[in-house]
Length: 503
Ligand SMILES: *[C@@H]1O[C@H](CO)[C@@H](O)[C@H](O)[C@H]1NC(C)=O
Ligand SMILES: *[C@@H]1O[C@H](CO)[C@@H](O)[C@H](O)[C@H]1NC(C)=O
Image 1 (cartoon, rainbow, N blue to C red):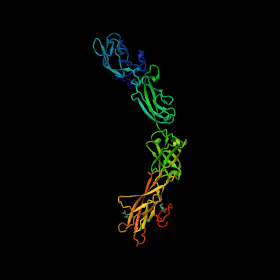
Image 2: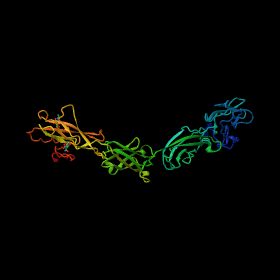
Image 3: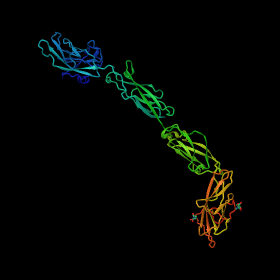
Image 4: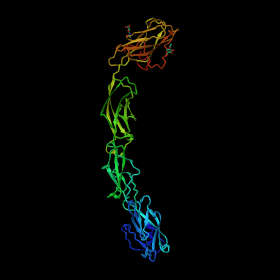
């Protein structure tokens, strides 16, 4: 080592004298850094590196080092004087031999070095024997600081099922001690809690997955990390930090119907759009990964529909077409559920869908009688005698028990009762001769009532035209759906959209 590197290393400012190395190290305290003292050849200061260790008890003065001039002749004529930072207070000097002592406790983390000046004075002449020289006393570190996790506690999130070795988070502790000297600031990380799921890299503090983890089994882990200085050896200080690790969801679970078979029922009275029932498939995942769509397979899909309730994840079965107990009493449909967003990684293992059977019974309802038509058009020549048959309406109970029906005419505001209906067979007759000049049309409403359940009533319109005896029979307007001919036989089917065919 030459003179200039030595200077730059310990920042000791020495006058630009030639310097040499020597092995003059009489103080064991000062040998650690293998610095060597520098001696001036002809005349001048003899320097040795000066260190004072921090945190030493202050009851006794501790020797730091010695100022030495090679002009010293041991004759007591030389007096050493110390000035600069802490001279006389923190550092004292024996003016006779130049030995420097530290008298107070030092703290490297507060002040890592002191700049002082040395003087050598001839006692007799009071003149400096040597020019002033500036030098430095370095404060040597001891391990007096424990590591600290400044950013803890930590929270991290990692996707479930991440492969082993996946990096989760890096934790870092800091240590106030001198990183350039000794091991006081050299930290080692270890896992106190969190095995065998996680591991930590001892030097970097990077936490990694140590095994595959399933969020559906456990979605949060508390990991405790310890940082120890002195590379974990004796005398080390340590600190711990907690790391909360949340597993985020991936789509690793398919939806599964709660039941293999569902039973539902719907009444033949229910209108289109009625909710028939609900099916539900469970999915262990959450959020988007649990999103699913229901559908119906097969040919029942023209009668039933299924929609997905995105809030409850239920499949709601709706009636798409009215059902009729008398023609079909039971439906069996196949409902299917599929995850909306599928993760290709898991598709190989199992299909992300499920199926279930839904059996739907049609309930019989007591339905009101049904007229063969909603509108009947009849005609009667004017001046026909009272009791002339105008026409006939027919209604039947669609239910299986086929209740007999009773007919009647709804009499409106006008009190003149010109027609009567046979309550058993629906034959309408006149009760008075009709005058075309007074009214050419008589529009009445007839009802049919079930005898077994008088609450079940239905209505039909009957349009009766009074014909001029001299007139030809008029054409019926086309918009009438059906026509009933006067002489139709009871029970005979009325042909739809085929006026006159039945006559
Ligand atoms: C309807 O009933 C009445 C009275 O019982 C009867 O006179 C008439 O012939 C019946 N009409 C038909 C079409 O059966
Ligand atoms: C009866 O119905 C016929 C045919 O719809 C119509 O032309 C006529 O004005 C109606 N008469 C009454 C009194 O409502």
